[in-house]
Amino acid sequence: MRYQFEEYALDTDLRELRHGADVVSIAPQVFDLLDYLISNRDRVVSKDDLINAIWSGRSVSDAALTTRLNVARTAIGDTGDVQRLIKTLPRRGFRFVGAVREAGHPSGTATIPDERSGSANPALALPDKPSIAVLPFQNMSGDPEQEYFADGMVEEITIALSRFKWLFVIARNSSFTFKGQAVDIKEVGRKLGVRYVLEGSVRKASGKVRIAGQLIDAVTNTHIWADTFERDLTDIFALQDEVAIAVVSAIQPKLLQEEISMAARRPPDDLRAYDLFLRAMPHLYRATREGLAEGIRLIHRALELDPGLGFVASIGSLCHSLNVTLGYSTDPHLDRKEAIRLIRLALSIDDGDPGILGNVAVASAFMIGDPQGEMEMADRSVALNPNSFDGWLHRGWVYRIAGKPEEAIRSFTRANRLSPVDPLLHRSFIGMAMAYIELERFEDAIEAAKRSLRQNPTHSAGHRCLLCALAHLGRDKEARDVAAQMLELDPAFTISGYIARGGQANAKLLIEGFRKAGLPE
Image 1 (cartoon, rainbow, N blue to C red):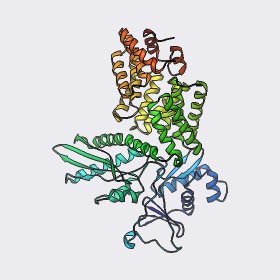
Image 2: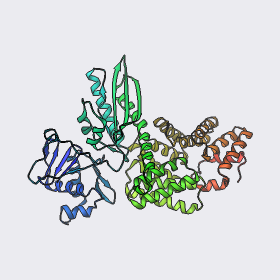
Image 3: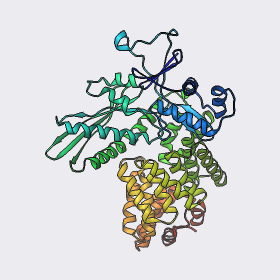
Image 4: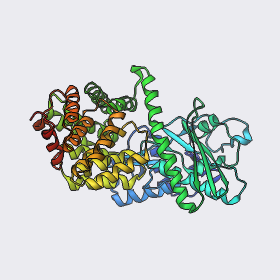
């Protein structure tokens, strides 16, 4: 059997690992380890599974197993930090997550490369999560120096995208095999086994550089996103970072929205756990009473199908905590308990995923209240993925709840800059408004609250912030008018009930504003 993945091929008959045309020298145990992981890639392989298969059940230390795994990763261009191909699932085991193509051939015979045989490569199967390749950007200026700039920028974009663990990102070395070629996007997607392809160009003129990029669905050959960025050509490395952040911040939410749209179009009887999660996301964005109930139902169905989806469990913890904090829950004690269970489940599956850390940090801030631990998780989240809108949004809420409004505003501002059209933008403005209120910056709070309501007029928290700031400024009639609108959305609201929902220990001026506006105790 010959397993082909990225630019590698593992031949179990010849017992060879090849990188392109070159044979990679590896120890027999490392070869067996790769063979076992790849042939069992449809499941998580436990430590005991590996020991029984590779060492015939002999006693093996964790250090020895870790060393062999690291050597295997190095042999196929992977690392323990990136885990692009071999993923470690804490306390569960290991899984080969790369897209693999199988090709059988008689033992003792070599496989002839496609260029000589004239046959086309069969298409690689798409991974079970969104997949993308960043092609080398075209240098349109004719300046060889710009070639290095363009290549470096593509590398920065690839690295930035790989920090989103829900994305499958093709390594730079594979994408760069298309450098200098006129490419057919469908063919690129077929050869690399990806659904999405990002391509672009760089042009230098008069001390400026213009970068154009476009994101294409390689399966349907349709354009999803396109934009142009123009910057002064001063510090070339800072410019690479700046453009990489701009591109990633633009396409990441587009990719998620595209995946959500595709999941919504699939027949209900053909839904995987990941599809159910995608269908739940719009309900989380809107956060209506009925929407959250449906989102929670879909999340739990997803986890029944695959209990190992840590990120989905972390989203579930957010849904249950929102059910409490928005006053929707018919049994707050049960929702709180379920949120805490899902927080612990998510962290037990993967406590090093930036998305999971951000989600559980803010859910914990509302449901548990361990400020130091929650700030540490939020800080780790943005350190692991500094280009995540969600990470900075959740850090802002964690710091706001912990009573650090200045740092909260800094996080919300960073989030807004990263994703100015994000579907959760209204929550960032709500958090900013609450932080401004505690800093007695009531005019700023009014502006932030109004911006949140323009994004989502049905979210009662935006109305609460607005009426509070108006009341503190003595604009009583306006405050009462907004209060009436808020009570239509949340008719059971009382100040004492709101405090009991959680996360308001450091919101003294917010509560005081409610009382000034005449909200029921």
